[in-house]
Image (cartoon, rainbow, N blue to C red; front, side, top):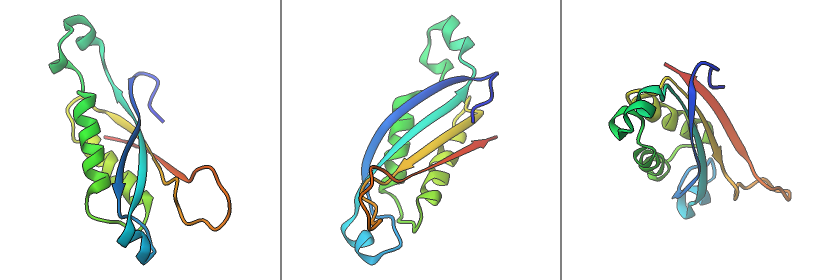
Length: 123
């Protein structure tokens, strides 16, 4: 959860193909992962200056998310969420982050709409 004293920048529905999962066929065939990120930041300076340098560039955050999804395979989406959270917190100005990783093609064995893991991390 983003603390109330922080503003929020949200980037929803970032998708890419990854090879994460505990089953061999997931590692071999891959699947689409969808990620939502909410950054806890203080946007007051950016609001005053109207300068991208005074805020978090969400385009770059999106590129980081795609790189994490496409990166080294992990067994669990919990690990993928942590990888993304760490990349976000490494950015100047990001004090907190909430990451949701959706795995809509997860091999659950029953009909379902979505499988997702959400984590919250702070500096």
